Length: 306
Length: 152
Image 1: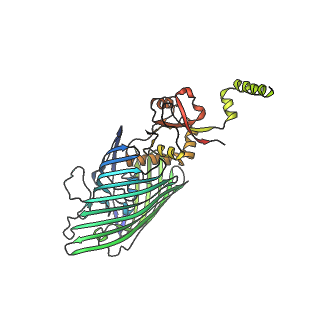
Image 2: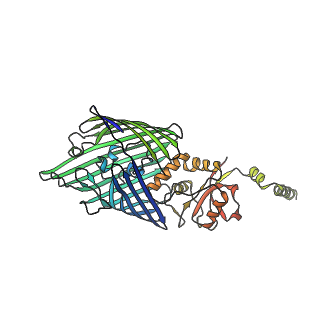
């Protein structure tokens, strides 16, 4: 990966393996995901599940079902067509501004019929702590941080060509930063994920409201973020993709000021080459704008699934 | 008396035809959903079938269904993906991987040998698969629980 920050050339290389283990015995399920990279090592998911009819009950650390990107692609670089995630769906350790991991109870189910009907995900969990970045609950060191309530509800409708849905999340984020006691965050949004022949479209809108409780008094702001990604399958081996991301009402937003590397606006384009089965090469170029600077980025990635 | 004679002649002619020829002349090719003859499941809609084969936990008639992929014939697989799943093979594979990555469990097992597929179906009443209607007979211990697609 290379980038250009206000004229400064930077290069960054990262190698990683996402270890995934799942098994099922009767109605019991286990799911674990451990990310091992040159930048970080983390137990990303650790879930104990029970299947009751059409419904899945999970206990443990899981991906927050806020929006769709987070629970569709997880940490699997191979699974997503492009290299980067939309900024609003970035993980906490990569300048993410929303809780992408939670720990507690997750219920995945579907109302009523056995058709592809109205599905839901409900998370009753603990969210992250703010330490300068958001720090989710760590399975391997559970008492390290302070964590408070995080609730998510996601309703979706699956249709023959994809899925669309709405979601909401409320999180109380304790802070270890001296100037902030706590952050109360509400997220409301909708998404669609549609596929038509060789085309596919993924889009989402997030309304994010934050109340920063400071020793000097509360500070309340809100902003709107949206992204739209289009993909075109040239052949079984080649896919083109492009994404536009934007943030409105972000000027002087007190919460976003805490995340100076958050990309507010971005234009992304690239190509994916599945050169052999379950191996992909991707090239991606983007123009980005954060709270304080503009930069361009060129990324090259090899990903595989074994 | 004349009708009886005609009916008897047609019946005699049909009885003398090879089974394959008879099927080809009297019925269009059908892609059917198949389960063990011991299964309590009596039928599924195409939408329910799609859900089961996308590895979504699905209970029908009190049975949590487990899908088996039939790749014994390239055409059966192609027709199933196009007419029921509405995806190309590569998209379907990506969808399954994504689903398993999300909710755990396992991807549906693939069978390239029809005899092994039928044996697996017979062994477990909660398994279902798809095949051409002429790929099995009632004596195989399996039954059709619905027509997914018909060559018109």
